[in-house]
Image (cartoon, helix red, strand yellow):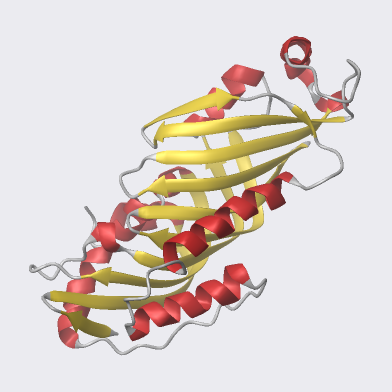
Length: 280
């Protein structure tokens, strides 16, 4: 799809792909170098749906900071190795198993807006642990993530000494000094993909009440509403309407509509948006 405002051409890129290799996608497709730098550390393949809008610059290249839309990734089987964020979590906690994570049947939904990728919270089982991950990253590789790790007390292993010390300084309310059956470690991830920072927050008990995934998703949904469906009513291009409709279906109404939007770009815009797939 292609439309114009005064001096600002707009293009829409929609695709559905299956069985793409993570490492090769990162090495050869410039879009994924911006959207998902972690691809360089994943071994395996993925499938994806994407519907992205971008303004086109005078040289017909996409303006990466204008990217807006949605992208979903499905991972049947893959491995993530030696991720710097998980290395730092391991150094803080002595938790075992984060150096080589196996991914099975994981779905990750993202929303792209004005140079930022919002990640819908998702759960990731790792040995005896359950990781919940959500947040955002910039196309400049800046990071702003929340990570929660739930693990049964009797599975702490080498992390038990650190955990006892942590609880002595930060007792969990309502437990009267006792330890929970399942403890939750909470982390704030910042910095950038090349040099991330990890701050360990107060622990909590992973029992009852609102799940950490539900709490993270509230924040995610609010960011979508503010970014796409708030006070900005001036943008009425067909492509943006399509994105907003998919956002409502996929994230704001509990639906799961993965159908691609059919578009027919002109030859000029095909040349323009091909920059999204050039190796940088």
